Amino acid sequence: MKVMKSQSIYEHLENRIYSGEFNDSLRLPSEKILTEYYNCSRPTLRKALEALEKQSLITRKQGSGSFITEKSFTIRKEEIASHKKAALFGIIFPSLGASYVFDSICNEVTRILAQKDCSLVWGGTVLSHSNNLFEEVKHICAKYIELNVDGVFFAPIEYTDERDEVNNYIIDTFDQSHIPVILIDSDVTDFPFRSNHDLVSIDHTQASYLLTKHMIDSGARDIHFLSPYKSSRTIKIRQMGYREALFDSNLPILHESIHEGDPTDIEFVTSIIKKNPDAILCSNDGTAISLLSTLRKLGVEVPQKLIVAGFDNLSYLSHIITPLTSITHPIGMISNEAVNMMLDRVQSPSLPIKTVSYGGTVIARKSTQLNKEDLC
Picture 1 (cartoon, one colour):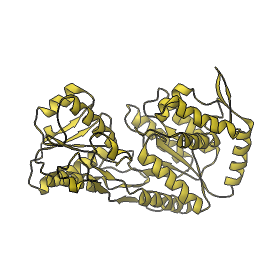
Picture 2: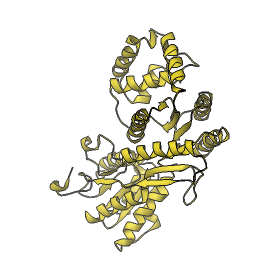
Picture 3: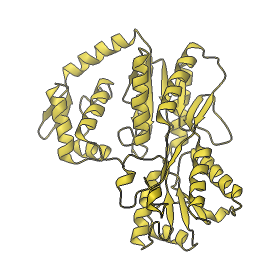
Picture 4: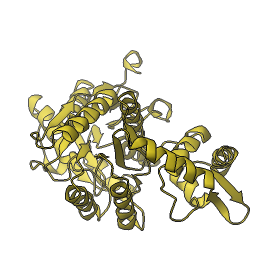
């Protein structure tokens, strides 16, 4: 998970305050909850809170917490009034503030919309592991309907048993209110089916094909695929690219080489290692980083004994103990297409459903390369 700096936390909390996310409770979550949410230390969080207090957006009471001020309500009312002169959009993304890819897309979408005299209401961040996930989603949807947003950018929720119920609720709620939804990164249905909503993403099949081919070119011949439980619906599509690369290289495609489980579970990882793979392609960088840690505990050297690759190209992958090979998301192209899709859908609701995907780029690092001159 990305460690955030105080300025980033300040900006994200400022957007959440302006969005009206805390208007019901009139207070921010506790410092304990916020430090866990932003993966930061208390001193770092307090710097962000001090900056908000200097802007008179919150007041802090020792022993009681941080409270929303009258100024934040006044600004919010002025913003809503001005937004109504132009298009206003909402966003529902998982783990904003802790997800490099979704954070980058959200920031880029905000920038592009501003150039088109449109606005994005923040405050639609959802934590998949939240104990009140469904209630939080209901609150976000109700808020966007109350604001009469012109459309919603939505990256489906994953990694929870509630994902189908939650995602379907979001889609159905906005459909009933005739609010267009643009899907980012994945659909709310399993491949090969498609929902009735526009979708823009990385080309998951091509991306995993390129990663697998890179591992083959690095000398791997027994490549396994690892994903965590309740993964994104895109995992099945990524596995297609993995299989296609094996097929094109005349390598066996074995069901027992595809694993689903916890990469921090030593017993589970040991069961994979006993199959003697020479490479493991992980469904995302978080899974790969956890796997690298478990492999170190087991004394398995990477890349000497086993090569590993991830997916997403998180910003800090060059700085971990074993720099991780991954693939970049074409953030700019995805964001630009998402905005164009939304504006087209708002103007012409009956247009045919559109699906657009863009290729990624493999970034080779130490985890898959033995020759230093090939590394980034």
